[in-house]
Image (cartoon, rainbow, N blue to C red):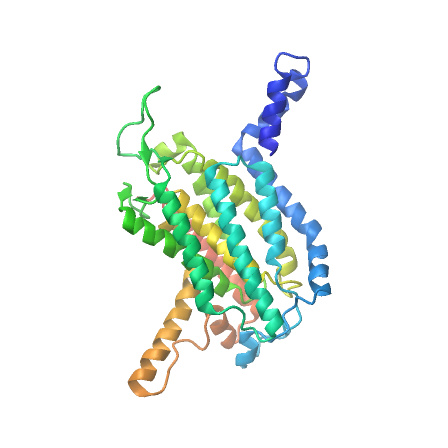
Length: 399
């Protein structure tokens, strides 16, 4: 909105006495300025709305009325405070600050619109799941297969839409850039991939691209959801990964930087920098209230949407595989659950008695079982998250 307003005012003032006074509005043309504005706006909105949203959730009794899975499992000597009664659905605060800040500071191109649409759909799904848990008072919520069907349906829609959408994308090592006046080179967002630590773009084909897009969105959405089990863990890691894609999206939207670093140039991807900045601001603002001991939980309302948003940004700049590196902690969390369940079922079929690889899954509860304090687990996972982020950023040069 600010971009369009400033542009309109500059056009109106051109050739008048107001032109000199309104010339600072040219700053709104720069993505860096608008990204900083989006981050600060989202942070301020989170701080301002936080107490109001928490009070509203308490008034509606939208709290965690059931003991969480870690407490039900027992044996967590390091767990001092029970989380029962803490308001959930705090993801509404994150999404409100994120969406409003993005709409205020970004240009509303197709990439931004598609990302915000996916965020809203996953937020609605998560809200329904959280509401069902509160009503049932058991932590059961929506049936897992129902959640998966909705996630797969959304991911498939996004994948097919991008497959059918012609997008300007200039690739290093491919055909030369079109001369002025010539028709632009068109490359599909789905079929072209970048492999970490590999220089040339890979034409993966439509089928591979469609499958990878669906798996990225569904997988990361659920991975963030699984990591949301300790105070501040999921949102802190989300902020770290968002910073990685803030850098990647800015470079992908800058033709000179993209050509120098030999990554696909995607016109309009720079606006995703504004989205990532807003996500960082909203995430830090929410972390203010979600750090230990948490005053509010994001719930599935926030975790499903945030994971899907990170995956979609990665897909839109041809970097879904970099997401595996940048979100390494999320990947480990999801893998721990899959391995735990798979090994338990396998050993039960073989011997009649199911065995576990970990003391408890997801992975953060395993370390709680080992006697780590909750704050220790969160801080050490943050450190791992930063290391994975550095590794992901290193792929820009180490190829």
